[in-house]
Amino acid sequence: MKQLLFALIDCNNFFVSCERIFRPDLAHRPVVVLSSNDGCAVARSNEAKALGIPMGAPAFKYRDLFRDNGVVQFSANFELYGDISDRISRLLTAVTPHIELYSVDESFLDLQELDIADYAVWGQALRQRIMREIGVPTSIGIATSKTLAKLATEHVKKMPALRGALDLITASASEQAAYLQATTIEDIWGVGRRLAPKLKAESIFTAHDLARMNPRRAQQLMGIHGRQMVTELNGTSCLPLEKVSKVRQTVMHGRQFGEDTNDVRVLEAAVASLTAKAAFRLRNDSLLARGACITLSTNRLKPGYQQVSRYLTFITPTADTGIITQQLMLALGTMYNSRSQYHRANVLLYNLQPETALQADLFGDVDLVASSQSLHRMEALDAINKRYGSSTIRFAAEDLSRAWQPKRQLRSPRYTTRWTDLPSAQLSL
Ligand SMILES: [Mg+2]
Image (cartoon, rainbow, N blue to C red; front, side):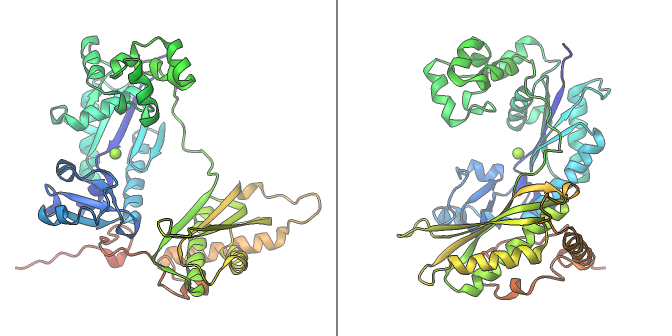
């Protein structure tokens, strides 16, 4: 059997690293990025980790620690992070088209078709290139299975001497064993909190122990997934590269309001704006939706928590912001309760199909003429917004109120995607 070769490129503390591109003054300072509504830490710099700030730390609980240690806080700037992520994907796709975009900050590459003399040197060079061209530090793990590549990156993060890349392919058997021994069970990809106690009960504490486990026993304990982990840890790949073309199944946009509200205009504006974003994503992927769902919920932490949803079906699948908004507004009217204080709204578009698959159904219910008019209308809207900035043209309902927008008081400028947010430099002669 042909041996597979994988590299995992994992961005270090990704959101924090994106912020630092434009704020080099933050290089060695503790930095955290906070979730929507500035609630809790979703990314931490190494310095912030060293202060003992855990993932998900609620900002209000750590206020004193943040202040006493000069921790720099940012509200999440997803527009910036998404753009930086796209830039890294483009760079990697130019290295090889055999790429799996695993998450916003991790990609697997299949190296089989590349001519590489020394994997570690190749990895270090790629890391330097990403640093130079994009400014994000990465950790690169190279191995014959994805699970081992993932394990390698974890060691790269902890060992600066590796200079950003670890090659487990040419490593000697004793070196490999040492890395596996130094990996605790919780740090193995796919083990997680649920499986770790089961393995410990079997006296399996490290990746090395798991690699030596009887595959049949692993399967009894954890299903086929367990057997695969054992095989992968021994260097044989069971998990192939999954190409990008996974068709999107749903598009969801949701927002927590800046303050709880029962103002129907605020809800309408929020739903209109979420719908506009979701429909734009559909059009961007050349998809149409047959179904939409709107959900309103009150604050889970307050008494009388409630969550209400309405589902809609479109006879003619659509990606038309106007059509979807109009239907969702009607649904909103039927679910709104003037005594409720709403905390969050979600808009979900589902039952998606490619634009090209739209065909007249047997009974002629699908209106192809209207559908093609709608596609043209939306093309014009997207073209104008692309040229003159997003939301140049928008639906009036989006403007009913801005009060629903979440608090993001600490968000950095969207340096790479908005002309107005470009960093400025002053030159004194
Ligand atoms: Mg990462």
